Image (cartoon, rainbow, N blue to C red; front, side, top):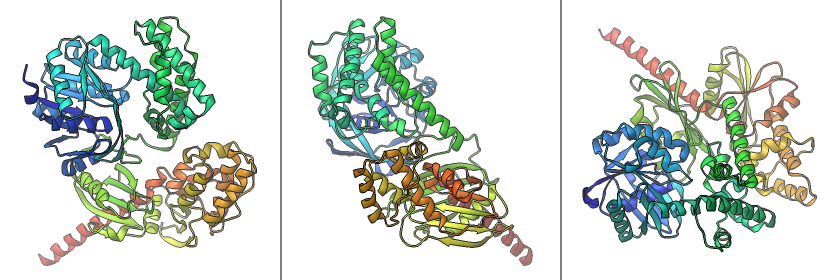
Length: 610
């Protein structure tokens, strides 16, 4: 076997764990290649490297940065660390299995019980290693992570104890660069895996279902009691699996969890963002092993099933309102995995809004091939630049059209159009002819009236006050302590008919506090906020004889507004598919149209000159 400091190591998955591992492996003198499917993230890491901050402050730049596991073939790693969600591991292993180096080991650096079996079932026990990670972080940018804690040591082993010399060298090198990692036997590692799974299971599902932070869960006597029951059930199951703990293990766990921060565990974040969760390998595994040993696990079962039901509900909602989306730390939504040829002409529309910047790429058949969005950064345009660079690396962009508040700052755009024109063109692509378009944005409300030729006949804007807009909802909901993601579900349960009297955000906040002091149910408060927005929209003029279509990011996340607008207008109101992207789609259509006109003019000029 090669000396470890001379072998090549790959890291798959560049979330916080993958970033932290990659930086330390490189610092240890190992030849490291990193890989993530998020091309925007990869593009930024190629140019700016990976940055670690807070508990660990380091930066590293990598020679080999890939966006596909198949790219490892030329690098030929001797060892690959897999730092993915369990939901992504099966597809990753299919790609890893195709690599020609059949002596290459794979380190499963992931949470949950039996995740290493997902690796060994594909490549065998002799090539499978398992690592228990005892550090964590929050990704702040595509290429940077705030390291929140490291409770040394980490633990590592090979599942059949056949690679002892290799794991010994890993642990020595990691210790030299401050990431203490202990090489242990496979039986010892199983105990460590159970310990961490029990700790993760104690809060993850509870926080996800209750939409509460870990600190909130441990501070409330009712939820604290639930945590105790989850721990008791899990320990009983673990002991049936011959995992022995000290008598005070549950007390120690509660003490450890009592120091948890005021943030959500990753499973809760996944559920709230409509992403698949790892529940089957946390509380779900405790239930599974409980059945094996006839040990009741009712609390773990309840939380497992509740997370699954909520996940299924989220998925159902997504299927009804959006095309399949690929998660991304940077992107709000990505649609990119169509089976298309990357050759040909592509056209980019960029909608630089007050809250989010949206990107849409179409081909010359007007088919959407890529969409993504990110928070608009007023002082830092580098993120937008990197997204555009990444898009251009993937698609040969012929022309770019910019629109929105920041359109004039996108100096690389070939043409610039107002968001009114782009909204009209985008909606007219799906719904040609006369119509009203309601655009509820982050800072304003627009009503656009189109004629039979799809041209703008008239338009109306709200005044300069941001009342009734996305920022209004965010600020008022925050004051009322209502999660934005819950507002539609809450409002639908209410029969309340009172609105906020104050259109001014400042005065509305005061009025919300009065409602709270009066004990108004949160469902009624949510509906009251929506009613005030509907009344604000209704003050702008629409043609009652024409169809009405709603667009914008606000309606994407607050679909109940459609119901209230239908009641107000006493007619059908439709939400355009992907309403948050329709303006950037219209911009992409303008880019295509301008390119076509340019080609025609060039041909005419050539005909004249000849």
